[in-house]
Amino acid sequence: LRAETNWIGIAESDIAKTSPTFVSDPVDPFGFDTASISIAGAASAIVEGFTIGINNNLEGFGTLRNSRDIYKIRRTDFVTPTIEMTIGFENITDYLRFKNETEVAVVANFFRAGSFGLAIDLPRVIYTAHPTGVSGRGRQTVQIAGEVRYHTGSSAAMEVRLNTNVASF
Image 1 (cartoon, helix red, strand yellow):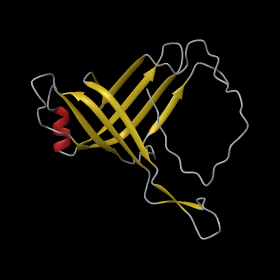
Image 2: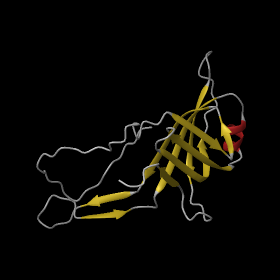
Image 3: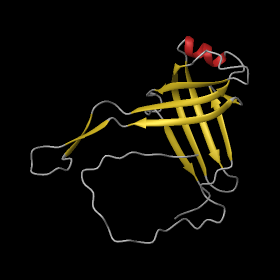
């Protein structure tokens, strides 16, 4: 599991050097060793890679106020979550979901027994790309792209839960 972020800030400044602090849990708290994905309510054994992107659609802009720093940040559109999955091309189920524009729920779980777990619930996903060309004589994989949509029942497009067995930090 990897996370990458991009930030927009109004200004930056340096601070004095400090020593970092880390969680002292001896079982490597975020070293997940097990992952599972379910698509449309069924466990999937063909997903080989899974990426979530969240575009906040923010834009920083300056004004004529005698500074080169960003003065305001505005939203240019709604928050837009996306997914990409690399799957083994073993059947045409996901291709038919793409072709028929079928919405599916996607749930990803990452955990380590006796430690932390991370659950990502995407109740409404629609595939936006599913290439069909054959890439050669070897094993075939497909890079599926999808759009995550707002779900009125849960009042969110996605839910991310961090589970722990630690009472407090």
